[in-house]
Length: 203
Image 1 (cartoon, rainbow, N blue to C red):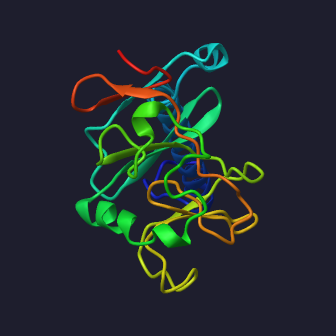
Image 2: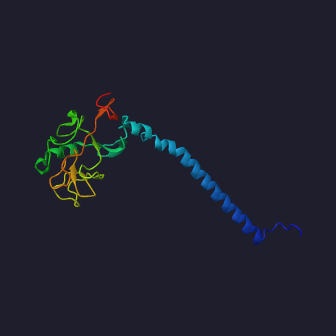
Image 3: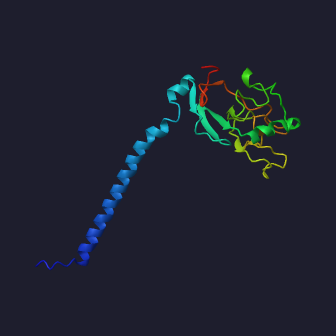
């Protein structure tokens, strides 16, 4: 048959199917490539399994942690909550002593340098082991004061989703909570103004 230069319906269907197949293959290849590029970058934020197993210190760059924000890292396979507290957050800590089980943290676990009302080396940064001292669940952040889910008295802090234990912005437990003691403070130190080292008392 002579070539008339006209594309028939059959030829169009074949070409269209081939185009869709090529587009799909390109998209899949691109996605896989992006995953391989991103994976080492994401993994670099977490301590290696070997470091965790050995209990080696975990380092955290605080430069990107804005006031009022919390980040979570891992040390000895435990979640570590790090909060950059604002002056407003710090101001709430002296207003509800009578509602706490251990307001002075005399019955709770923390290094000597965190045995104070703020439970920290530096007031603006709070470092806690993020497991409830009742049965080990992970308390959720509820930093907004007067949260209607908790009550008008609420100064901000954490609420455990498992059994309702409540902790303030220093990790101190409220009366009426199943947890008997405050959230634990791990050993930690600062290496310069913005580098946190968890797992050691000095660097």
